[in-house]
Length: 232
Length: 232
DNA sequence: GATCGTACATAACAAGCGTTCGGTATGTAC
DNA sequence: GTACATACCGAACGCTTGTTATGTACGATC
Image 1 (cartoon, chains in turn orange, red, purple, brown):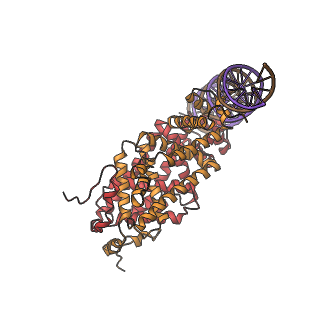
Image 2 (tube, rainbow over the protein chains, first blue to last red; image 1 turned 90 degrees about the vertical axis):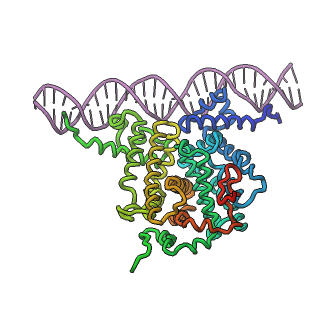
Image 3 (cartoon, rainbow over the protein chains, first blue to last red; image 1 turned 45 degrees about the vertical axis):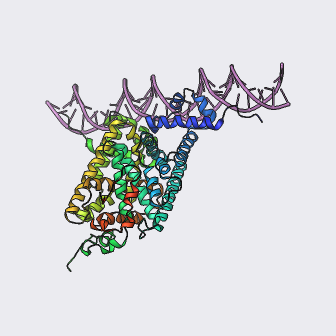
């Protein structure tokens, strides 16, 4: 019946923020309880008071980071307005994944770094899989909406469009993290816009395309060489 | 003057292979000298005999993995023939990045896992940056070639096409690793082929697109407008 | 056959790790 | 004022880590 003196959950959030900072600065290899405690100006006793184990601490920190990103850190989505739909919302959602600011870069770094631990730990892997699945569904919803509005090509399923688009931005994140000077925000945006422009092109044109340039057929032939204009 | 009894370099390669196996099975957190030695059926003494430190061991293993991938593990590039050029070569190069077989999945896993360590360690980061840069240049060369053959749209720079394409496959790799059942080889190939199909579409069609459906303008309204066909 | 590197095994090392635990200070409840 | 959680600190525990040092088997050289 004794009410908590301080705000328990708020403290856990502070601890998580310290975890983020350590992760950003030193990666997973440098994530130790003592480092986190030091970042907080506290001791490991505090950490063990709020979390039963290091894994629980990490999991909570990642959960919270994901939640924060979903709820708050979406500058583009906010700029687009809360009731943005279709292609505008799709683009905003994708832009909010890219490391365009120091803050989002730090966030991206944490996620990329977490992939190693997640691929080893089944529970973390499940968390991640669920996260990216949810993200894909969110993007797919925007894509579906954009299709209905005639903004997006309809010759492809929204799920495929979402998977492809998410792959595109994820890969861009990785490249940008390793070569920031080659992938400044402006270029990242330009690459994404180019990508979206292609998805927005109506289908009919593809069919109208010069017959000699119809690569689609050869492309889907998977393993066999894509021969064009074979004479025999 | 004493000639090496066994083949020194071959032994280092064996050690590296053990590193790969440990990395695949347990990730970076599980990469210990004792684990590697155990994988080899040896002791840590062997490791220290061939490598001055753990970092050197890891770096060599990653270098060798990259080299092996560049030189040998390119089934699609080989299937396309050594003198394949243009879009065919481009597609093969991208396919060889995807985790389509157990072997390439293991390789992809190692690379994704290595990103954490690489983002922390400046030297490893440099290695990675150089690797992806080289890969982009390779892809860009194919893209340039494909453009000259009229197989690829020419309204975009080959470097941008390469960066975008590499991002696309890298992101696909990540998603496939976390949700293998959702991204079977067949779907990965299909997504890539869809992507390439768009890049192959000739430019003129984009300009011909129905004016009412010109989304590009609205898309960029957030930051820097990429206005096309501006009247004034 | 003595000498000398190579090629390891074995053992020990200090450092650092996550976790456990006893202690203390401080608030609330009765 | 007594009782009792909560909220930590501080220190210690056992274990694992990368690294170092010592020892030895062995093939090549002269």
